[in-house]
Image 1 (cartoon, one colour):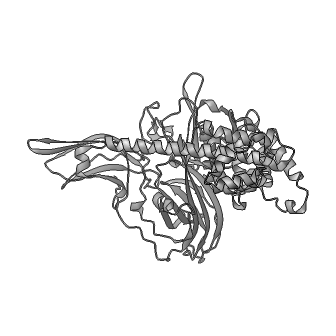
Image 2 (image 1 turned 90 degrees about the vertical axis):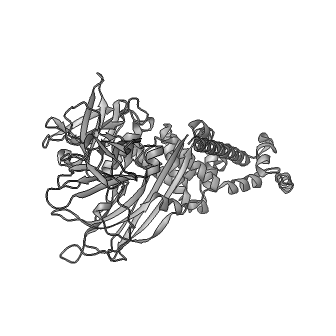
Image 3 (image 1 turned 30 degrees about the horizontal axis):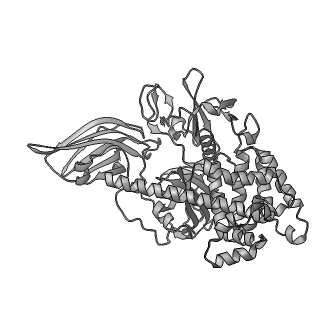
Length: 595
C-alpha cells in the first residue's frame, strides 16, 4: 500500500506590483518551487503591474515535502532578472485549508537571502563523559544540494560547529554545491545544544549563510544524531510587506490519498471495462454510464481524465473512443444533446489528443496504448555545435533521470538520462530542454516510465565529469558514487501519463463515494421490489444489505443490477481502506511503545 499526495495550484493573477524598469513598468512572471526545487514557471506578462496568468499545475509529491513557494520576478533581457517578492506556504498551512484549499489574495514578502537555504548535511555525532567532563565528537562528512551563492552557480562552503561557548570550522572547499569534508571536530568541557552551520566563504565582503541544523542536549545524550539532516534557515517570523510589493491571487489544494494494492481496485476496473467491451443495448444501464449520471458537473472533467488514463494503460483506448462516440450518437433528443459536457465529450477530446500527439512528445516502439518500451527523440547534442543527434534508448535500461546543474555546461534546463549498456557499464546522455516546464514534463514522464526498473541508482552526479573531475563534488574518480540522491516520486501530474492505474482507480472510487446517495436512489427507483426495500429501511435494516441480498439479481432491471454492482464494489473498497487505516494506527502505536 502507498500514499499519494497531489498538489494542485493555480497562479491566477497579480496586482499592484512595483515597477522595476525605467519605463515605470515590470515584465512579471512566476516560478514555483517545492522545497527549493523549481517545478513550474508561468509565462511573462510584458509591461504590466497587474498581470493575469491563469496557469494551473498538478504535482504528485513525496509525503515528506515541506513547503511550496511562489516567486515573482521581473524579466530583463540584459543581466539577471529582478526578484520582486515571494509567498511561502508550508505543508501544514495548505493541509489545514483542506478539502476546499486556499483561494485568496496573498501579499508578497521580501526575499531574504539568509532564508533561501536548501540542501542537506551528513553528520555523525557522539557525546561521552570523561574525567575532565563531557566530550563531543562531530564528524562532518559532506553536504549536498547547497544553494548557489556565487555568479558561477556554485559556492565555497565551509561548516562551523557551536557547542556552549566554543566553536570550530572545517576547511573551505571551493566552487561546489556538494562539498566532501570528512573532518572530525572535537570539543570538550561544556554542555548545551549543538549547532552546525554551513557558510559560503567570500574573499570580499561578508560570508553568505547556507543553512544550519541544531540538536538539543537531550537528543545528543539519548540518540546522538547520525545521518543526513535537512538544512534550515535561522528562526525568524516571515512577514509580508504590507502590500508594498503587491499581491498574488492563488488557488492551492492538497489531496492525500491512500492507494491500495492493485487487487482491491480490480473489481471496479472490471466493471468499467465490461461497460466498454460488452455494452448493453440500453446505454443507460452500464456501470460506466451510471458513473456519468451520478457525478456532479464540476467533477466530470476529473473523472473523464481518470478514465482515459485507466483505459490507455490497459490498451483499450480505441474501444473507449468507440463507446463514447456511440454513447453520444444514441442521445437523440434535444434535452440530452444539451448535456454534452459529460464524460463523452471530455473523454473523447483527451483520447484524440493523446492518439494524435503522443504522450509528452515521445514515441513508443509499439502502439501508444501498449506502454512505452523505448524513448526516441532528436536533440541538440551538448558541445556538438549546430548538429543534431537522433537517439533511441530502451526504457528498461534507464537507471536514473535527473536535472543537471547549470554550471556543468553553463546551460540552463538540462537533464541527464543514465542507462546501463549490455556490458553493465553506465552511460549518460545530456539533453537540453526549451524551458523549465518542458524539463519537468520530461523528468516526470521518464521517471514514471522507468519506476519499476531493476537496478535504479540511489545517487548520481548532478554535474558533469570535465577536466578530470566532477563539476559538482570536485572528486577526481569518474566512477565514484554520486554525490546527490536521485528522485523518483516528484512528478508533474499530467492527464496523458497512463502509467499509474491504481491512483486513477482510487480517484474514481472517491468520486463514486460522493455520488453514492444518488446511486442508492437510482437503485430504489428502478427496483421491482421498491416497496419491500422501503419497508425494510423503515425497520432499520441498511439499504446496502438489501442491495446485495434482498432482490435476486436475475429479477432486477439492468439499471438496478448495475447500481448494485457499483454499490457492492464501493462497500468492499471502503472496508479495505478501514482495514489498512487500522493497521497503520496499530503500527504507529507499536512504534511509540518501542521508542
